[in-house]
Amino acid sequence: MDKLVRMKMHKLLLLAVACTWAMGAAAQWQWTDKDGRKVFSDRPPPPDIPEKSILKQPGGNRPVRTAVPAAPAASDAAPAAAASAPKTAASAPGAGKDKELEEKKSQAEAAEAAKKKAEDEKIAKAKAENCTRARAAKAAFDAGKPITQANAQGEKIFLDGPARAAEAKRIDEIVAADCVR
Image (cartoon, rainbow, N blue to C red; front, top):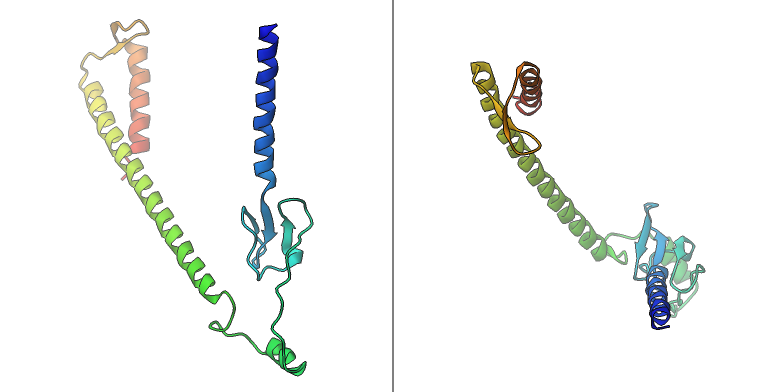
């Protein structure tokens, strides 16, 4: 009986964890930005994103945002003129955010480029080391020295004709692949 209770508790715990994961996944915002890319976030989209571009929000698929009350205008002609006037970079809402976003994007790209360069250097260093080892092994093969290897049991065995030819071919392939200059 005790084992049955533990199994039920285990199942209940697993169900609770699964529900927690599902709730975390449901609390996401999704919208299409001005460039047409889908954006996924745990925060609501910026105010300049139109409601028709909001694809999903926490609590359901229908986007609901509170309307920002407009400042009262002296006349109807003034808002129309302001709306038709072209916005400059300084007067556009969120212009500072765009600059910050571009700076962050360029910093991220620079960091990614540095990471890629470091990775490429690491690969080049490994290839150079492999090349050095392969050339030393090739020199030993070409000199006709007896070559030993360890077998599956860890015992040293001398390479005979076919095994020696196969190993020489493998070393030549390594030299061809890693010793490109």
